[in-house]
Every structure is written in structure tokens, then in C-alpha cells.
Image (cartoon, rainbow, N blue to C red):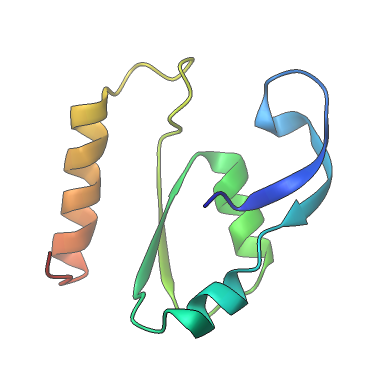
Length: 92
């Protein structure tokens, strides 16, 4: 589930979003209280999530999954996620 549900934007870049409509994370977390951390891809999603003010969940950013951002491949991003889980002491 992405942070931004909808809104207006020109082109493909998420940085061009205006009038964002955010997904309902509070309801998601109420329905699934065992969620401990949120891993967010990309700067726009990270800062958008931060604006929501959800303080009882740890959240982390990894690079965007956009094809433009190819400096880190899927395996590299998977390693980043595993490192976050280790540091957070989350068991898989």
C-alpha cells in the first residue's frame, strides 16, 4: 500500500503531486495491530508519511523502486530491508 492514494500530478514524477489524498494508515494499524514498522520507498512517500504524524510505529526509508533509480538493484534493496528488520529485532 502506498502512502499517497491519489491526487493531482503532472508527468510520472511523484514530486509533482498536489492535493494529495493519503491512505488510511490509522485504520490499517487498528485492523492489524501487530504491524511494528513501516518501510517506505522513496523520499516523497517518506515525507508524506511523516506528515501523517503517526508516532507509535517506527518507519524507515529505502530508495525508490522507480526505474529511474537503478543505482541499487532489487537484491540491494532486499538487503537494506533485512538490515532494518535485524536492527529492529523483527523476526521473520
